Image (cartoon, rainbow, N blue to C red; front, top):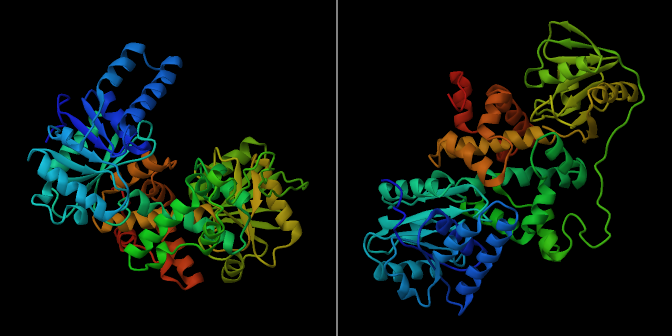
Length: 505
């Protein structure tokens, strides 16, 4: 089905931040929009707020005054729910409560015409459950916007068991016409984004709990090496630990306690203490006026290194060799298994094993492991760990070499998979399982993670770039190190490696 015609009236129920944002998006696209809230005056106040917000956009020169006036003119507060009867699309954005939403949908089914599409902006509830009990459950579709709706590009179009596929396609095309980036997904816990994103928080929380590094260092590695806009600790402080922890618990419970989604005791402590992040003034960081922000730990070396030996290909990290050459380091190439040698030190990309374990198994003295970077040509920081018997001299030489490439070097304890690598491997693994289970296509999952949570690259495309055998090896080694199902590789990942194919082939 094509997108809804702009003459079709759209109704939004719930005049909070999300509901008002969705109403603004529909009105900006050209639809007449009615906004309803059961709190007297709330809808009118929300429209006034939209008007003021658009006024600021006009002041910045990004919107003309006439366009602002036209958008606001298309917004109308509804005095009662009965005023929504002529709508062609109703989007509910009320409290995340299954029974309350079900009651509203039953009311709307009786009120609105049979061709009216009933959409829910739920972020966590089952569309199948919401539609159950309706006379025509096929007309219920999930239309999950991300906050703030006028700015965030992603919309998850969620199909329940009974959802009419043509209506899901209509809303997909409608969201596209509204200037959004829609993806199709089916009604499973967390849909795409809230499911696939869990490892981003979980791995940093586990690294902190295991003493791998402090919050500031781990956040800096995710930003400066991984290319993420924020690290897990500053992001959860921004989201609010009550919200983030509740979502994790919801997904964990919905998947019958699957250990991949296990909530963090560290985060629970923050919630129990009322340290919810920015909104309470304290979370992982202190936001009180004058509070000093902790800085990431960095290693420094005064060693002089002018030459390094590259044995074989460094694969995804080959750009690091070019950076060293550009900095005046003499590069000596020879056959080998992807190692860098400088002085007494041997440098290698992490494969998910402990540094001490790998040093012993591969016979590598003075081993220093390097973490993953999104782009080794542009990264400003890199995480490292080293084996227990690596000498101080060798470690110093390794740090000096990385400094020659212009990198800040942050230490991690000898933990499997380091920080960025294990996080990206787990994100890709969760994305792979979502594809395997028909939650979404590889293209939709990558788009959802880029547009919905601003990942620098879709996790499946990132895994393709790293090389699926390397990702599988990392996960196998993580699972062996921890002895936990948490790190079990997806069957789809194993299958693609066996076939010699990538996720996007």
